[in-house]
Image (cartoon, rainbow, N blue to C red; front, side, top):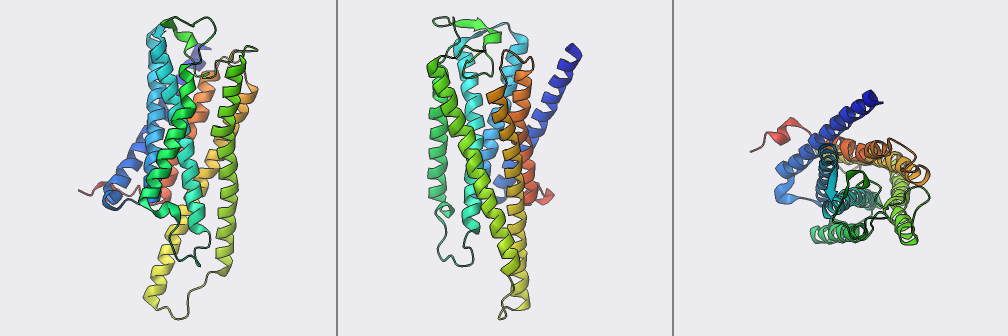
Length: 305
């Protein structure tokens, strides 16, 4: 059992390092190449990477505290839980934004005259700010929810500061905790999964229809046709990357949702480790999918002054 725990710890460190490197590289690539003319899509990628980084860092700080101490101040435990939830949910919300944005960009692209709403930088900022505010409000109740028997105490045993944010242990789950738990699951996990799944299907349908109908215009010159074809190839490559990331998102968070609803924290010894792998697999792998698919991880992007 101890050997297995050590292996799990080593795997957690490896996944965390992969996630840190990928998200930092994605942020640097966007800042180096797009800082003066950042577009909505790149802005959403920046928000996603920042949320991913925050979640990975806070989760590992939480683990270090657990390994080093036996007690923890309640305010510190609450803050760590809040920041973990905030990073997790903000990452999910930015994923939904990216998916919706790409779906809107592809819909009626050949007939559209005016840019879509999210193409405007101010609109992108406003929508992103709204999603961040909603994520904050949804995570705030964690400060009011306390484990049974700890009300009024300023410190607690480190074992009570767990990733089980809703403080439902076994058959013990007060009504308010239960309401918060299922509201949170529906709004932050189930609804985003539905939106991403439906939008991904629409994107695939659009790609398939364009593949059948798009042909070069007869009046276009050779250079114009090459430019159009090159642009279409970039959009197609970027969209495939978005779809790949959405597929990873669907698998990852569907498994997490099943895990949350079927596995009890008190009955499973490796509950925290399993939750870590499920929540950080998307945040660690997705930056590589977005970066490679959008040609952001090219050496020339990092060599610019």
